[in-house]
Length: 287
Image 1 (cartoon, rainbow, N blue to C red):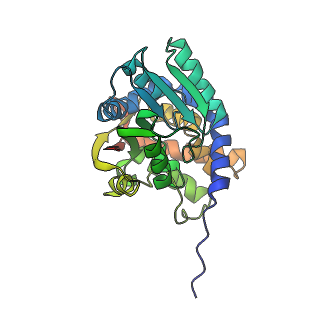
Image 2 (image 1 turned 90 degrees about the vertical axis):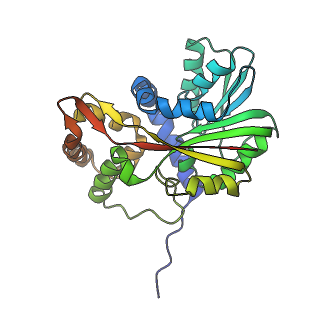
Image 3 (image 1 turned 45 degrees about the horizontal axis):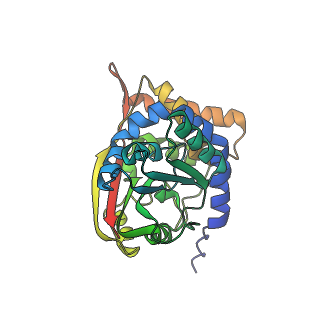
């Protein structure tokens, strides 16, 4: 008889995510200019598909250190309102600081679980989520909550990574870390960077959540840096998921793993610098 598949503990996972981003949020903010170069095209595509206009009320879920909340705030202007939320109290405080530094008084921040919004019905014109939905244990539940918070005719726009074969920036390091840390394969239902990237998956979860007329665009997001070494420095500091995968390894072994990752990434170096493939799916739909 086949052994029962281990079940995924969503509550434990969420606590780990909160702790990870409370710890790694400052690094994510420190590398914001680099991250904006990589993901800025996808961010602008999301805002366009959300049809954001001056004066609107926007909700940003899993806002991290302030994007796309800040870009949305610039589009809605002083007469609009943006609420940036994240499960991590630490990183949402960084988003608050970024908004204040830019003089964007229309941005408010609150720590909140994206699958369980503490917000009234029909109170926003658009909901945004950049690179967050695929890390949520119950993406359809999350989307239903976002739909509840939207006024009739409101828009949702999300960005997720596509498939591992189109995202060597993450798939290659993850495969090395998984082998070296002797991690079991992901269990059924486990969220992760590529969990919504398969053909038709994002469109399907939008429909399951009750949204109408979903559209999904493919957006290349090549990760460029001066060298493989610089790329690995960003990955080590800003991509907390890699460090979480190695949490049980001794420091010396972790260092050795990162050295192997850097060696593998050198194949993406050329005389013009470093460029490793990445690809996002940007999906949008209407309530």
